[in-house]
Image (cartoon, rainbow, N blue to C red; front, side):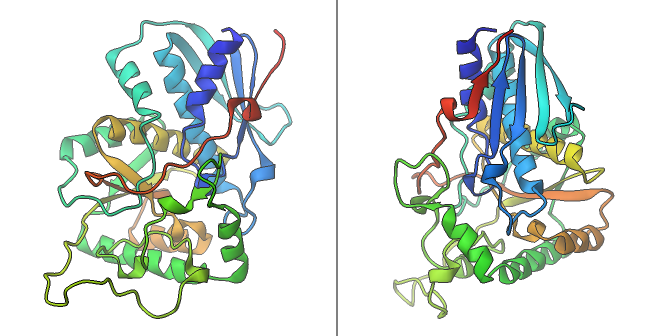
Length: 334
């Protein structure tokens, strides 16, 4: 692989989702390998003290790199947590040969820069069952399971945990960390653009599922009441498909696999016209993850809640920026 080939692969990898768009990764490329490292300078000590969610983010970037490599005509063998004494060295992709890219390889790669987090309400139409089955199969290939939250008692239990977690996270240190990663500059290369956050109080949103409130510390405490005709019919309640992703274990290997599984299903969903956004509040806290595991009688450890659906016909919000490749990629001689 030439340096320019790795530049293209890493450019695609950086489109992966990450918590608060921290993009906590760096890459080192050689002639036949690409190494992925966790960038501790971009850590979230309050929201993610163990680094779990950021390692999951790195796992998604790893899978985006694998997809880009396959579409470029190369086979890659992935080795997780190589035993080299560096705890920040998360994975290695070794180029093992060439391949003829399939239509699926090209389709997934084409979805990379189209995928972005959609926090606006989804349309009411349902995600097709055959797509859900495919997402479960793809996640399973990476030792990750996907459980749709469809039974009413499971939805109630999960919604309550998400809401309680949102309330728990309103401390000053949490809000300060959120604000550090909010961006008002339209040219920002990381962080969450203000334009990407839906206006209005998310507690008043016509949906059972509460998205993270990025401006809670600046919002008046009175409830949000949308302007309009009081006699008008109530807004249509959003009914997204929410899936829980999890793993058999709960260590760094499992977190990386969860991230890879997330990256894989997001690309398949995007290729099918379905958008996504995370519902991470309930899983920020170890106690609520344990409670969710118990309430849903899960065999394994919950890692991610993901909201899936069809995005509005008219795009809303801004797309998060991406760090330049030269900021995240270095080369070593062969």
